[in-house]
Image (cartoon, rainbow, N blue to C red; front, side, top):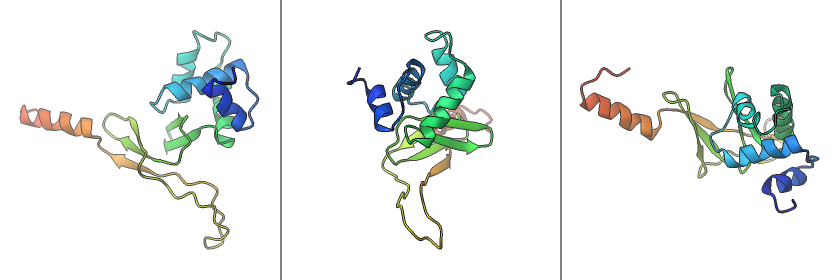
Length: 149
């Protein structure tokens, strides 16, 4: 168990491992799609019949508070989670609504004592636009003579 990456992450973040916490962390560490609470719940309910949406929600909130996962708030309707807590930016495609990791762009997480009187504890950076796959798809549709919105 000590070599399990999910177990190790929980212990490093000061979170007492339980079956449900371990499974939720394993899900985050193996699904790089920036899943929502509902996606994680649906992915786990067959393996853990006793899991509830509330448990998943509360566990993810705790993971976020203890820096075991990132909570990504794209807008008021979409909150996603990322098991990769290494500082990096995200890109949200407005066409396919996927979130991509931009590992080579890092938000500043300098824990400065004074930025105009504010103490910085966290920084998140995400971009919005159209991903390369959706651009290619739109270009192919344009070449084929389809109307594109």
